[in-house]
Amino acid sequence: MQGIQHRAMRAVALTIGAAAILSGCAATSAEPEATTVSEGAIVIEHAYGTLELDAAPERVVTLGLLETDVAVDLGVTPIAIAKFFATPDGVAPWLAPELDEVPEIIDTTTTGANGAELDVESIAALNPDVIIATTYSQLGQYYDQLSAIAPVLGPSETNYLQLPWRDQTRAIAAALGLSDEVEARIDLVEEQLTTASAENSVTDGHDYTLSLGTPDQIKVMNDPADASVEVMNAFGMTFSETAAALPGLGDGSGSAGVSEENIAALDADIVMIGYFGADTRTFWEESTLFQELTAVKNGGYIAMDLSDSTALRNPSPLSIPYVIQSVIVEQIVPALQG
Image 1 (cartoon, rainbow, N blue to C red):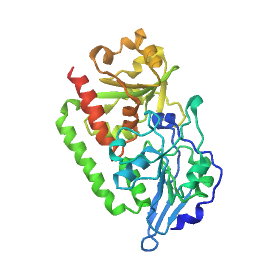
Image 2 (cartoon, helix red, strand yellow):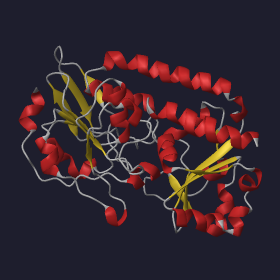
Image 3 (spheres, helix red, strand yellow):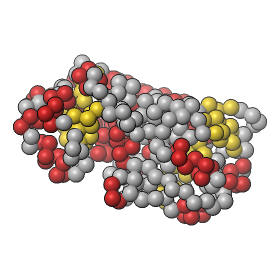
Image 4 (tube, one colour):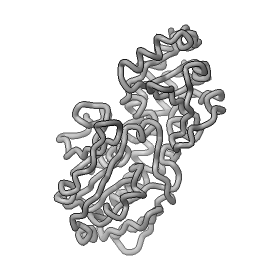
């Protein structure tokens, strides 16, 4: 396999953060484009170079949630996956039921004092055939080091939180040599969305906001192109026009910062907020201005688990069914029904 010649050990600082997952700080590059050169070969151009493999990879390392989800959904269990920040075992709750055994967890957390750097010697010792990093927010900084270990698939030019989940799924499937299988998986998820929408029509016509609560401000998603919008649109829900009109933070997160005095900008039929810590949640919920929100008074406020908000902003063939049940059916529908 062509990736073998890239397996020299090289020092590399590889990190991926919970903040990037939640707030949308994503790498930018040209959308991966697969090219067929010879039978069985895989050649995919992306912003940082070209992925070249002589055959479908067997030993796969994934450095993001979507990459892992797509691989596992297509029957490929990576030898190592990026750590999910919001669970004790480092595995996303929508992924865990799909794994017979948990692969090696790569601690790539970058948030706060507990930020960790990648143990390069460990990942090199795994002898990966390919490293799939389409949602790795710092790939531009570390691409050279990573590609010295194995061929790397980089992200598209668009912020990955804006790229339709179908396109990302197809690009990852191409890198795995499974383009023929992926369309059936995409069609299945589309059918699940259609069925769930029909069964939960109470959501139709309502608007919403989706935010991350921090000690200093609430970061409300204000990018109508965010990948989560398409999933919510499938249920007839619309992204808040007020939130969309807010000035962005300019940090690539697709979010606007809202202070306590301006918290009315969060209001909508459904207000979803995930919090970094119980103290942060308490601070905001005890605010008099927060308590005046129409959504809070009418039962449309949802204090969302970070796993749920992460799944919503990172749609995949595995996370979308999870969102349907955990977010739509179990939280939004009851909130709308009162």
